[in-house]
Image 1 (spheres, helix red, strand yellow):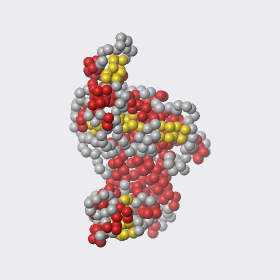
Image 2 (cartoon, helix red, strand yellow):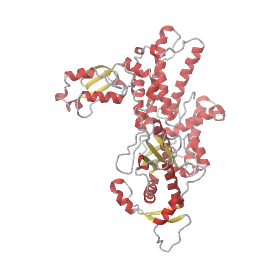
Image 3 (tube, rainbow, N blue to C red):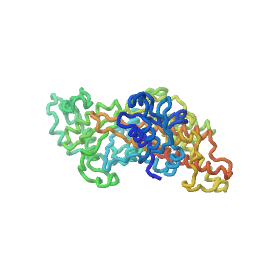
Length: 542
């Protein structure tokens, strides 16, 4: 039996290739009502563009029915239907292949190239924690999630700026954002000397304010880049300050010297090839103009400034139901934390906020609520926050709902473990001995086909940055993980509410119980991996 991991992409690629050259025809089904009869479909209209009257030749039908290849799922049957060409997989065989190698489906489908480096710059972290706006908080969470996704993909990531404010560090720890700290600022002496040579000498006879060195004309650089680059045409002069040079010095230092644990062969080596490093500035739309100035100033003052600088612009955050006119990020956290405590008190009774055993849980639930709110919308789009909405494990779109189902999974496996220790159930048998044909509930196929099987591709897509596209701006897919985890939790919750996993301890039922537990082991592995991409630990109870 082939041992390579099965893949949705590989299967779709083989299906399309089997029909000959031309545009993509096949689609993967996701809806439960369609999956009752098919797993992939070549729609009739798409077939009409490839074949006369949409009729696929008989010999191609035979090829599709016998389709094989690396990563290609085994086919059961392929037949014409009114909707088009329908294909169904050998589901027991797919269950066996996937659930016999659970860990393989919690890693990216295509690792990054060796030595790939990304420097992520989040200017919002230079502000104080108490003044951090919600739009800035969004950039911090996007940058943190993107860094985790890139590292899981095998990319070497450097985060800038290193945070000096102890209050900001405390707040980031509270948010479970993994960001480096620094005790002192990078030296800007060399950049200062270079800047003084470039500065416009005339100041109209006016005395410059302390900290301001002069101004530089950026118009020529903007014109060199061209209109298609995306720079604001109003960029003309830049007021050069000591603080601005300090920012550039830190960026340049980070670009030239990578930490020892960052990547073999790169540690501490100056000028390891700035051209090979992608610099991504993650900024709010309010800060974009200032960041463009910094970008151009870097190119103006430093000969070896990175050739590839991209701007990931996060859209504005619109708030309804806020207790005040301008809510800061810490106030937002405290507001959601209070709602989490109140919801738990209503569910369990008593003031659990004073119970040390619940302190950690409330912190995780609060952060989960915030991250799912902030990250479930594509970063480029405007984000709407409805703060008046109550926090509940019943709402299927929230972070608390995902964490609630994470806790349900933990409780299930803990119940099995306790029952096994009491002698009610036998120990878990070798996976190779399980009968995967016992998995025939439609909810089981939904969990595997829509969640476990495509997860490696999802991990790769969340780390995808199109740095070859022309222009200044870049897009990221940081919303995909939150949406995926919500859908996984919905599918699991529906299945778990309907199917009794740990039945009565009767030997003739153990086979089905174990194979279902193995399926939910895979669900747990995927869920935990997805939560780790958000900096969230799994919860054992809520």
